[in-house]
Image (cartoon, rainbow, N blue to C red; front, side):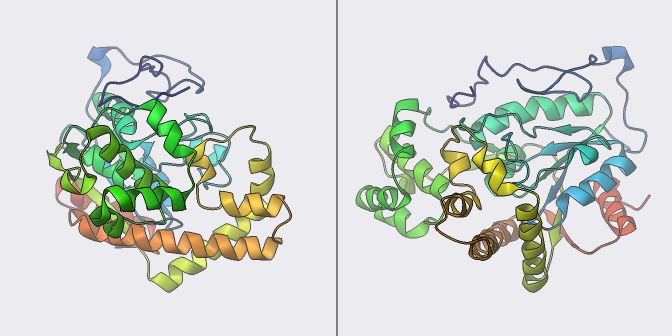
Length: 346
């Protein structure tokens, strides 16, 4: 089980374990060992010690496909920054990279947490930072791929200290409905209740946690970030809203065809994070016979489209990202990466 993080100390239950894929957590098969220090060399494609390349974009934007292209071209290793793809057992629901794709390039931090666990942004930072350092030390390019803005922010910028997580309080809040959490937040912190995205249970729960643990409204102590953790090189995969919705519809239909409902039904005890994931509430209703498949599919499309809109709003504020059209060619995405990493095309 992965415990809640206390500040930024890495739990002993998640050891750094180097293998053929560089780093992993419990549950990932391990083979091989890291190369000796004197065998670790710079990536010959890059002109300096490899700094991470961030590949960001809303859901269904094609990040995984572009990541494979870049990993093969730039001698890179792919690192997950999608909050839900961290969980195993829901690969179809979260559109995680297939086993075939994972065999084409090293992939890290996919399916490392049990569905019953809680994995937050602070814990993600503590797991991911040593991994990025290890990949770079072996002369490979870390390619961080995802659409979870807060998780990416915790990697790219140094966060101020947050109150230590309280497992008892977290369990108490996780048992509440979203409406009840919003009601409580309105009572203790009206400004935050008006500002926050009320449709995102994780945001509402974390706001309550911080307010209750610190004794001060979270609106008075916004989580701030001190400075960037190093040179930032990032690509933002961009689509027009209509084109992105078409991709969302296509992926949702494929998800249902590939057995997403059956996958969810096979989980014994999904935790709050998985239970609230986009698609899961709708699939639960489908499994209970409350809605038919067509209705389920449409509700998932709507929820995903709303989430993509929030993602686009977040990424617009990250002005260090370089927008690239979603339908760009392999040559164009490679050229954009070369320009960012060492100031010119290959």
